[in-house]
Length: 213
Image (cartoon, rainbow, N blue to C red; front, side, top):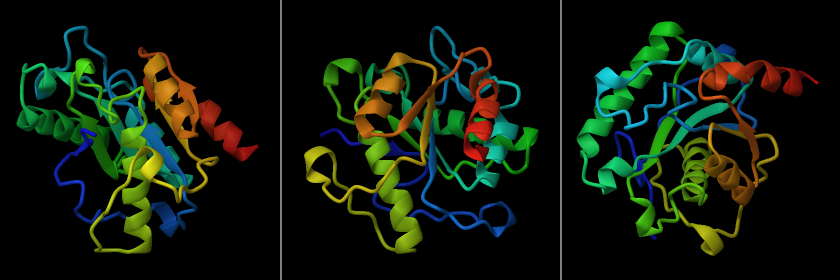
């Protein structure tokens, strides 16, 4: 199946979640976020090192706003340079850490709960590579398990093997590509297409007003 990879931990390890702002209760909503073109600038020849990470202005503040609304924040990103042999998992780990540091520098509330990535090239046909929904399936199960069974390891199912699926009507996926929107549709979550120049900050007002309404 070629499962997704998790930044900093094996998929099976329990996820430790930080407290939401103002000790808000979690109602089951997750903001699934693409990375490049949503949080940081997309690069034509990939983001290849921490030095290439250029935060899109307002991304940190947008994440904090979502967390105040009770969303868990999870990044789901295709990273085929690994599968193409351009660089390895340790380089990606450094890039992801730089991204999290940059978000927190902009706004101290901009915590990411988890980053999942698909390291496979398109030719490998992985279920976890968008436009397939495998990363989203894994995120939901890991976050749910962290709330329901703290400290317990994850036992994940994918595709037709995952039969006890929760309602995703309150969750969102924000991406800058058609593949993101297809993944959202296949998973059953609302997809929001953003402009890669403005990223998440360009659609946050739309999200906030929709939830308030």
